[in-house]
Amino acid sequence: MTGAVGRIGSVATGHLSELGALVTALTIVEDSSLKADRVVIGDTRSEDDVAEALADVEFVVHLAALAHRDAGTPYDVYTGNVISTFNVLAQAGALGIKRAVIASSINAYGVPMNPHGPLPAYFPLDENIPSDVADWYSLSKQNDENTARMAWRHWGIDVVAFRFPHVNSADVLTRQAEHVREDPAFGVREGWSYLDTRDAAYAIELGLTAPLSGAHKFFVAAPTTNAPYETEALLDAFAPGVPRLRRFVGREVPIDLTAVRTVLGFQARYELDLPTDRLET
Image (tube, rainbow, N blue to C red; front, side, top):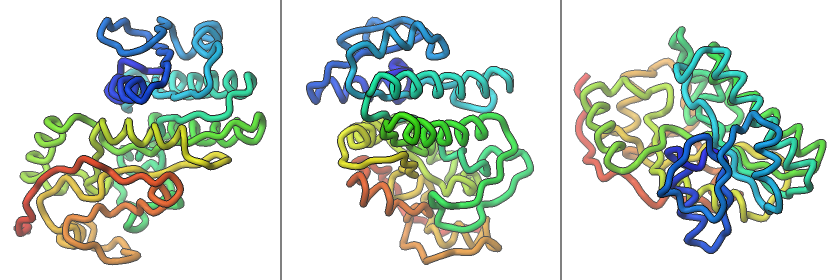
């Protein structure tokens, strides 16, 4: 588990440990509360550190990243993310490790962080939606998905890449929902999507154990939005010119979750308990 003390990594490490897995954690930050059987303090950009962490492991979960466009300089964000992913997957593939799960992002299709403010090509978002990348973080996540496909084709390592939306604990997600209540335009380019960290850990479990082969990318999210308004009303107000491939019921998230549900059997277990209010335009 790289990025084992991060927001998702710490929860996923504990979740997998509780399932009986023996977890090796690769982290650049020490944390005495980390629930891992072996801890390697190191950098995912380092060949030696990754080699040490991968010794005698069966599966890989790669979450380490600078997880925002503004988490560092453009050079640091882009190179750090793509070098880390290449390093981890290339070494894992060469060792004959059969499965890896990596953190991609909803930003891999470019629109959410695009400084020009475009809207998606259509709703619901799906894995084939056209991309419009204009920032280095989104580019790094798109290239991480390309690295996953290359690693599968070259070494035969199966890779599951999750296009995570905003992932956080229930209390933080609840506070964010209050912000969306006041400013419902916020989040239109991400389809007002979210995911509880516990569900992210569950998705990782399924990504490691589901019977599949190849390199796969999945949008993964809660089935409802973080806005206390009907999805159709939100789209009417904030994306009126964007084509809709189908209608949405109630607060249904405008992301097509068919692939992650059918291939991995994923269904979020934790949703925000929000009312459905009338949207005042």
